[in-house]
Length: 326
Length: 267
Image (tube, rainbow over all chains, first blue to last red; front, top):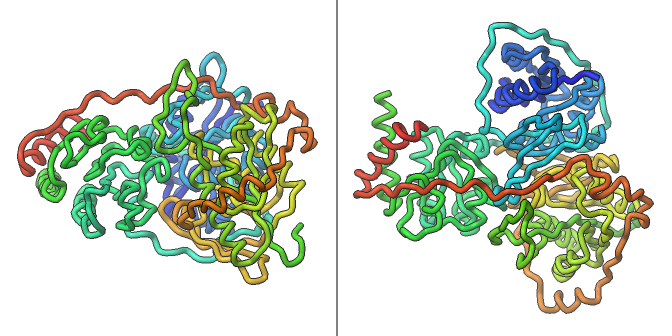
């Protein structure tokens, strides 16, 4: 039985998503411990460019399932194609990005193949021959160490945790995979326009987030201005979402999205337990709040006690200035 | 599978600690004493949507919950909201499982039940696995739509049109029924139980099913059947104490940007 690792590389707008390159790094570290090769599978329609990009990521082989039927994510079809590919390639480990789509596809495929799946891991390594995985649970209020009792297994890795792999000078061979029709009962019939935020919250390097202190929908304007300068996504606390000031899709916390950006700027957020759970694994946390006793300051690396309506525009101006000097 | 002129929905619910709970980890385990338990918030959206379907189309809402005897408390909460009855997969053999064994038990239970639709939360907010409901769909050879934020049932109740969210984008998906749908925040605003509902819930039937009731070998479910094992839990690493930056807004902003660039090297 081969000990290969297969990466399922997600694409967006024709290119691999950033997490695909991060997965190559994870896979290379793991491959050393299991004496296997790293392979990649790209599923989609017109994905030649993404396939070519992954072939240069220092991997042994790229499988390409390139078919018009795979234009939209169709759970039953995508899972059937992926399951066939896994049966043929027989990897010991299949890695996914723990994106919404990655989690959904991996769950359906795992059930189809009767494999185990460990989702949303922040670390994966071999210890005494066993695959050990680290995953935040309760939205980060606790960290679970999980052991896979046997292989094969599927694992999804949280985006933004590992650095992307450096491009390689060699080019891996590409093998095309035939896409067989499958019974499809649930399908996409319409794509709704993307939301106002173009940067996906869970993959953003920087998140600018607002809470009760933002005071109303218009109070998010200075946050959007700062986000634009930084190329950041805009998030919100439950208080701001429940008040109807901003779309619920921006909610960060245990009942919203869990984020781990390089920089999280919390503006007018007091720091309720369920919000802290969703953002406290961010690399750097900045808190801006009028209340010096707000719990958010306990997790912040840098805090400014002050009115966000003065501090945020000042920050925007300062960032504009230094970024233009670069 | 469905009875003529009725519409049966089964909602998968899980008992989890209230999200406002400060979670303690001791000796590698989650401390469960003193925790207040709730229906996982995403499951609550699923219960609410099922009740709204019932108000519109009639039929029945049944809760299906795998958990220890104590889970009855949150099952009663679901019944108080308006569900008609509940099945409790209540057997020590089910405990300590992984997503695969839990899905196996739930799927076996659903095979004995009548339904036109199965609803669940997109994930439970304790283990955050986000895979059980989708696994159940595959095990029962049902289509699924994940993270639904808007649901329109066709008048003939044979198909559903769902708006769903994925990675910051929105798709409209259509599925034939029966299907499994998972609820995402935004689907609805869950109701609170009425006093009448709370009183009435005490009389509603909760049926216990064990592994043998489902015809399942105890070795294939729970901890015995799991291929994944949680070795231990740890509290998250404490963050080092932060720095409060003094000064008026422009001064503090300038210093913050300098620190982020020179010390944190993040910009």
